[in-house]
Image (cartoon, rainbow, N blue to C red):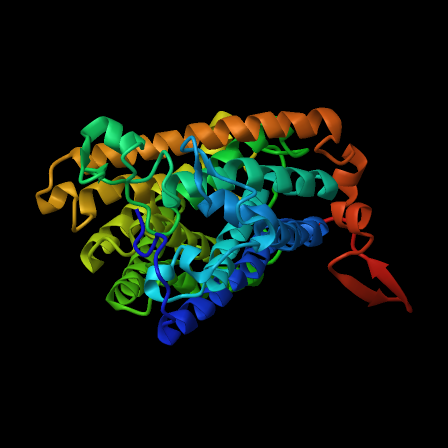
Length: 441
């Protein structure tokens, strides 16, 4: 459930509109920030390909969202699963009164802009599980299909009145009944715990299993080639995330201020939790751990930023920092090559934030005397999101594998995917009067 959704008469509020425009710009900045974060984590021979996967998602999803993405997310309901893709195709026939934030005086096009940036970064997040071995064309093909068949339907189910919302026809209503035409215990997802992070995290896991391991995974070191890039990326993500979370209030109001504060303290707590875990486990708190802890905290507080107290946010962030730090090692135990820890950070962090919201929500959480019902509902919507994303991703992933093929050749993977896929290299040095292009890290 998010505030500000619905179809109603429109009166322009310039303050809310300005805040949503600024928030949309902040969220858009997150995808280049993610490119730096992911780009620094891979080896130097793959950095351009890794960054291009994020930029490619921006170009492709930005257009798709305008054509049918908004309509599939917030158009009239079709069986509780997605919105009518033709209702606002190309944003035709879209009026301000139809906008998802109309009640807050924000023009429909500004709501489209804000929501488009969420779709873009969700797709880009998945790319971290495919580093060093994926054909760029295969990635873009998958991205366009996945955002259409997984992201838009889940956005509709959670935020557009579908199956995972507080609708009287949703899962929550089926479990605990309805009150005044809505679920008695509504699911909570303020800014994307299910729609963004669980969705992308499961997709990353499924694709890592379908595409397979990198050559040498588990046998040779695959260290980040540029830790300053990683920390710069984390900083840009943290900055942009204030638009992501505080902007999701839909207005320049007290809830936006609460979301800003909870986003800050949860992220601080998660970073500290990750670093303490590293110190105990490995003997050193690392810069990579600090950057990863920042992202883990941002992920975990996303579903509850406007629904929990600052103290609850600290607890959620601390739990996420510790659990995500432990979870990133699971790929070595179970043998799946989630290259840049999409599963360990986004899936685990998204699950932590979504489920703990059932305990820490000030309006309906167990710790505030409201019973266990909300906790149950949060678990149900988290599991449902995993199943939906997992099934769609598996179908699309195997489809791309059978038709286009996911992987570059072994020679390209070993020698350098940047040169083969993009015809350029990230780093060139001058030596002996000629330009020498680096091929391997």
